[in-house]
Image (tube, rainbow, N blue to C red; front, side, top):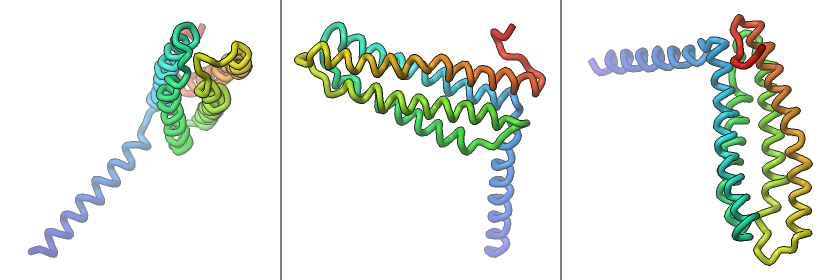
Length: 171
């Protein structure tokens, strides 16, 4: 009786695993798009936390070390989503859209490491020149964000058009 029970249990487990693996592959193009949109929406909210902490440090406290927590959270999110998007199975020619998101997330990672991290060593005793130097780097890198988002949006509109759905806000 025991060997038969083991075989049955093994069969059920294999069937469930196959079902779950197949469930991941049955995303519709809209589901695929929505999953990616959720990434940018979440990243925006996480970025707002860093922005609030930055404004407080810049305008009030001069304690830029407080930026570290928000920056680390953002970096962990970006790195996790980079892995997630890189490993997504393509749905109906989604590779260009997926690649646009990978490029965008790599850009965000670069901005976090090259523009956000340098602020964390500043203190209330730091000179205006030290702060301004870092502000220039932040402006330089953040000026590219619009172009990166445009590429994501263009890939998203093409993907929607190819797959018979529309993107809100597209005229």
